[in-house]
Length: 121
Image (tube, rainbow, N blue to C red; front, top):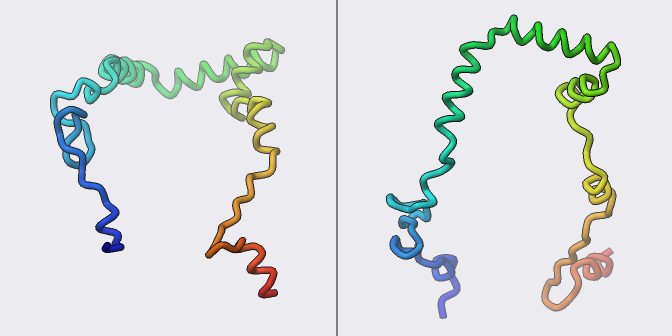
């Protein structure tokens, strides 16, 4: 038995039933390879928006948003802070980050690597 990295590699999957080419990419004719059907419409919309809205227009809108936020409009305060500072992180994400990470010990030749290190100290 040969223990080499080459012997552990599996051959590339054939084109055919799974709809992928030899490199694993979607092959021609694969229905899933068409991508987002709304992408072209979205690109046209964004292009029109970028052609129409000038920097001066955007500055005027932002000035009005800031004025509404200063006047105490709750929706304006929320929008301004969400866009400038970022949305607040949900509580469950904060809770997950506060938990200590899992400790993984590597077993080497039947001995715990941590115990082996202590014996060497």
